[in-house]
Image (cartoon, rainbow, N blue to C red; front, top):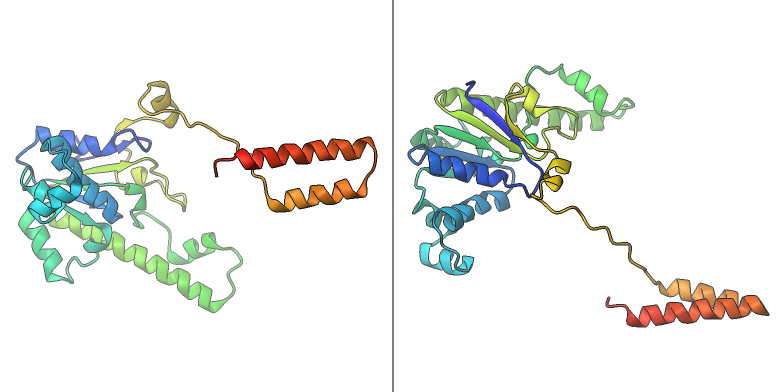
Length: 261
């Protein structure tokens, strides 16, 4: 309805498969997939090969045949381009970036890990932000560093805004396990205007059996200094207490010998 939507799923609940499902249902649309890390970018290409192309051979074999996982994915979905956030910083400054965007003319822009988006939309001035970062900033150099970081965030915000302006036809899909950034900003509120298509909490995902609950393990760590300390105590006492400590020492040694690592 609004041309934008956010999907909030915990890690392991299949955010990438939302994109794959969309691709399957809209095979003619051109898609720009943005992510903060190469691993995520390459994973999307691999998922296309695996789950749309049905090719489950070893990744090395696929790359050797196609030249790269990207080329392998484009055999099945030619109208997709996966880019890093950092690449968009070259928009309007690097011909190579401009050419890719202009040629693609995306119908859908996917922002994976959207909480990494660095925008300052509807935010206060830079000095207010600096004051929040550290109330006790007095060092001039530290202030300059913080201002530089804010300027970088503003630049990214401008580039992202420019990307959307150049592609008014594009819908926007945001994916994240947590829309709240480390600085407290809510990306869903700020960019997606609370247009949440689907949201699942970690507890709901565990209760539904989508992901397994974590298994907590408390290991026994036996350090050499613990054994030495115990020996010192044994040598410093007599009688029944000495025998108790000897038994404790022998038990620790046995545990240490049987430990797998």
